[in-house]
Length: 157
Image (cartoon, rainbow, N blue to C red; front, top):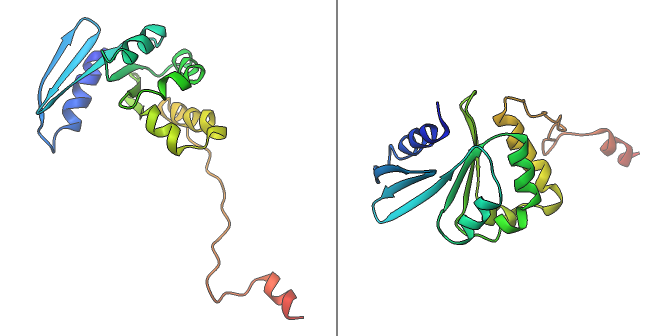
């Protein structure tokens, strides 16, 4: 399956409840989704480069759909500031072999995420879409309100 076909199918699947998607057209490397009241253009490419930034900044595209590969991940990380300055930009990373994806809106994400853990968080989404299981951290068992702990026993002495 080609990336553009995957995106067509995904947009149709996503619209099953709303039924607002009226037409999906392919114009070169653009996929144009026509909804009731709006049109969304996606740049579909195997690789993410400066062209993606230029076309998104100009308003030509509102979404970028690329393959979920290391080069694209590194490009987004190294150009995060530019991506995060575009309010309605949607980035879609797709692993065609597994049929997995991760989607992010950099503008919104940059406002709610901790900058010090940005790369780690994006890396986790990247890895999960590539079939790697996220490491599960062991958490402490939550104490019940009236449950005594060893610390409480020491305090009483």
